[in-house]
Length: 185
Image (cartoon, rainbow, N blue to C red; front, top):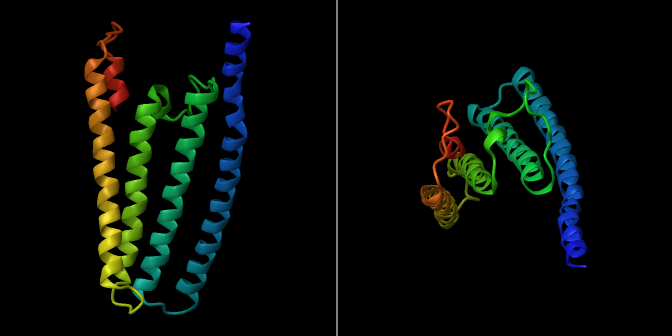
């Protein structure tokens, strides 16, 4: 009986598969949003003389969409590989380099770095718009503090991962590659 319970628990990881499929749908929505903004930028750029800050804000919005999309890919592929099942794409020429050494800790640090990048884009957009009356000094302060909190959190995650790595045995594969160092990359 306990073996069956354990097997059912092991199978329960597949409950997460619809979550990753839902994130793929969210990815499609972001591609649609990106294309709509790109068409808007093309119309503005070739159909008139928009202010430089307007073009810059639209381009920053496009970069933001790409960074969020990259975050989604990391969560979809890395999360599925880590928590549900192997993708079995070893040796495929398009296999992401980071996937070969992904684990929950590496994924957390990579996600934290992506969130910092996204937060940086948002903060830059707010600073560009800071002259507008809708943006208050208080809002600028809070958004900057939130961004700094993301930075400190990412540094803490990386430090914790580094400390945990220090406690792991260093295995050398004989080919000059140290798996523990690969994980940190």
